[in-house]
Image (cartoon, rainbow, N blue to C red; front, top):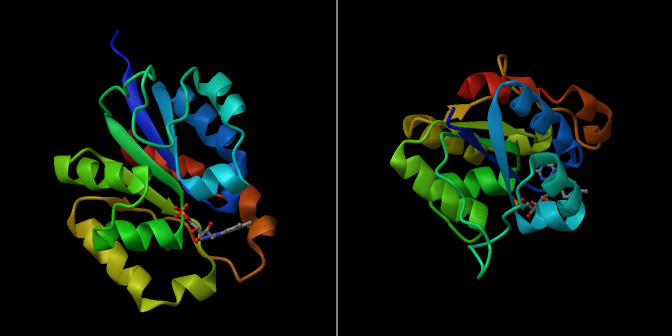
Length: 175
Ligand SMILES: Cc1cc2nc3c(=O)[nH]c(=O)nc-3n(C[C@H](O)[C@H](O)[C@H](O)COP(=O)(O)O)c2cc1C
């Protein structure tokens, strides 16, 4: 059987510390998981060796280096936790991290993508975020935000709601 390849794009927000939960759910759903992480995720939240052990693949943080294995073609993509920063830059066409440049290409290719934000109510009150969601939706991206998706928490409450981060919605969205 050919493997079904899922790129898990990880940004710099708290739930990245619990990315093992997403990996387990994705494995249970039959995906081979390839993690791609932003510099902020790597600096503050991730243990790359642990992730490599969990997924059996090295974590990509930049363009393919010499001797590094190429990423297989993605069947689907999850962006989670998706930061305010990455969401807005992605929608604006900025590609200054490896995650963003990959998202630009994958969106253009029409690969199924689900984005599960992790933002507080202060960030979510900015009109620009909703403009970005509209832009991404119009490009075919599944934005999991609001009643049927991620619901923002009050500022400084992120740690308290982390355990309830709805990873399963992202996995279900790309099935
Ligand atoms: C401890 C910590 C927690 C953070 N939590 C969030 C968060 O919940 N949501 C968010 O959008 N950004 C959060 N940030 C800010 C992002 O990490 C920052 O905007 C960064 O530039 C995001 O880069 P990236 O989008 O390339 O991952 C947090 C940063 C730190 C250090």
